Image (cartoon, rainbow, N blue to C red; front, top):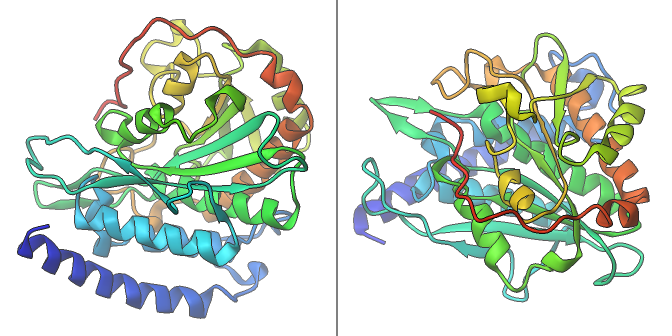
Length: 344
């Protein structure tokens, strides 16, 4: 790492340390005292989740572009939360799985990247089908002098990922759950590809990928679940949860006729889909902040976000109860295709 990069990282980490102090002071606030949140969550720690998103989407992290000091700082903060909630590292070497970040015009000499992989053991640890829950933590960085903080995209998915992990640590699942904070989504699903190539990941046991990407901003209160078109048997699970979910849970955005609104290959779940592994992708429809500098923490809809996180717990719990049946729905891998990242 160059001296300039070391100084930049040190400065960012100093700011993050201040934010961490504020987080620890505020995380004890009761969920019924959170501004903008009227819903009382049944499954997640809303205060901790929202404060994590606030930190990840702060100007101090400079938009979390892969290969930058801001992204490294974000990774360190997520790792700290993994440790605090009691998540266990999956890899024998620790939390981080290396990800090679490719040079690009705005960053010709990127720093190293990494995924963070933790797990919650099921009733038969190390055996049986597995759910892999993913959310990418990188965003677009600084462009034309403006910071693209990516609060909804995808600090929100990371906050929900940690909230789900914390729930299942306190309420052990039937089957092993892997929780993965992915790097490099915005520059070609680099973290997801690295995950799939690593022999330490039990791909032969993976029954389902639940991918969280943009789950905190919806004035209409609508959360979409994509993936049932490709695995129709999952539609019944989504419909069952939708009947009692605290958000309006809808299916869609996964058909070829949807054109650019077909999300099948537009986030990290694409690599699972092409490996023949069923996926459920949860996200909101595009909003004015999508891939714009206005995607700030102040623009999310907190009450919806907390409701969405509870809904995601409900879906994961339901999938866990029928995971052997979902595992049987795996398909042969598709022909090799390089899915593109989401359009900028």
